[in-house]
Amino acid sequence: MKNTAVLLLSTPMPLARKGVVAAISEFLVAHNGSLLHSDDHLDSGRDLFLSRLEWDLEGFDIPISDFDHYFKPLAEPFHIKYHLALTDYRPKVAILVSAYQHCLADLLFRHSTGELACDIVMIISNHPTAKPMADFYRVPFHLLTNPKDKRESEREMLELLGQDVDLIVLARYMQILGPHFVAQYLLRMINIHHSFLPAFIGAKPYHQAFERGVKLIGATSHYVTTALDEGPIIEQDVVRVSHRDTVEDMVGKGRDLERIVLSRAVRWHLENRILVYQNKTVVFV
View 1 (spheres, rainbow, N blue to C red):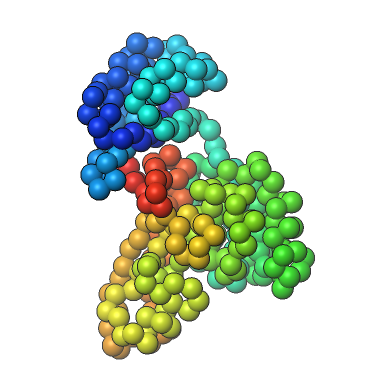
View 2 (tube, rainbow, N blue to C red):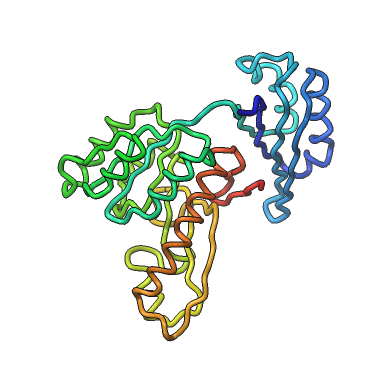
């Protein structure tokens, strides 16, 4: 496990041109911070400068608990919005799943190999079929008591999850979550949608794609918001289909995409590589 810190930040472009990168670099060097990575992006349409910096904490002379106090005098003149994260922290992750288990299986396997640096603390489902897999990977499994009652299920999940969970992954959890539930975990909940958004929002996107005769199908991983399938997009991928493909063929091809796209999004979130702004994301990879 690395002992580094990551700073994700944004600032108005006119202020950035006045030396924000140099000012932050000088700040880190002045406090014995060794800069390891620096990645920037200019969004000219929104007049924003966005950046991800990672530095070694060995010898860094500011206690992390006091970072805001020391950094605030630099941040205020540049109107910097920022988020600080430590790479040696293992986020607590919960997974929600329904009957389809392919994304769950992929996440659990990648976690077992160390690819996903987190602690998967529970799996919650409205179907019992995922329990054997959860038992195999020794992850606590909870079957919702009354899955047909949406309000009661969300209340039950809120009690189970609390506020200690850092990230919730919807691994083909085929229920629309209510606004009260979503509001508790804004930008802490990642969904996989089985289409190339914004095309084919909602239910049965493969059937919609088949009816339209598309030549490409895709999968999209995004943060969950109260607007169905319209949260900030993290990752997408596509595969070619033809007139010979049935709906079942499309579903089979799509499942491979869903696994990969979701696991990438989860890994990038865990590694603090995603900066969200104005319903968009910059992913520093």
